[in-house]
Length: 58
Image 1 (tube, rainbow, N blue to C red):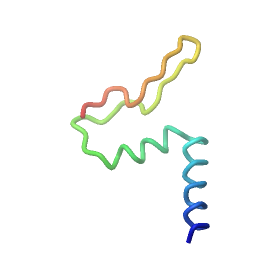
Image 2 (cartoon, helix red, strand yellow):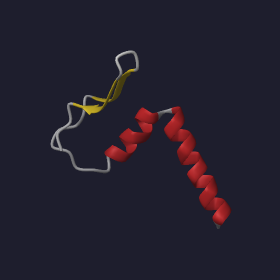
Image 3 (cartoon, rainbow, N blue to C red):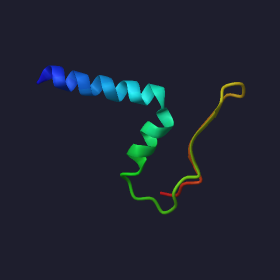
């Protein structure tokens, strides 16, 4: 049982690292929103600027 939990957690961790936008969008879709976002993630580390779920209304 513990190995199965560790395996699932590892798969989730890898998914969140490899494609964070898709990972968090799937989670965000489980919530109710007044207005859905235009873009999940926008980032510019030269400024630095990171924005999540631009355009959304909760």
